[in-house]
Length: 83
Image (cartoon, rainbow, N blue to C red; front, side, top):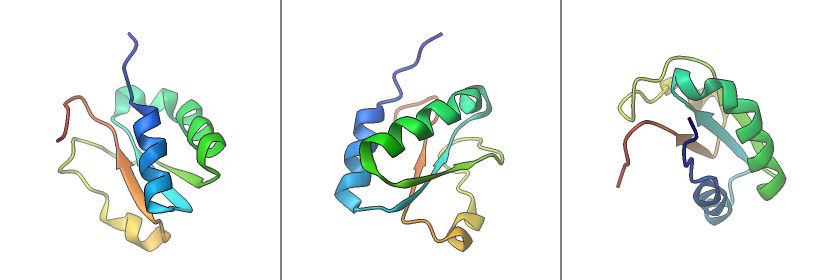
């Protein structure tokens, strides 16, 4: 099944924030696509993309350890639209 991951929106946000190091967090079902997603974002933004491989149970599951990685931006993907 294909999902609309709105990668162009992620690219725009990375550029808007001038983020140099970005952590992406994906639910388990999308983790197999993490390498492809990271390469796309790196190519479009020049940012260093870190893939969070820990658990992700939704937008409320923010990995607090990310702050220790020195990232400028955390982008999460989930199964429901977040507005």
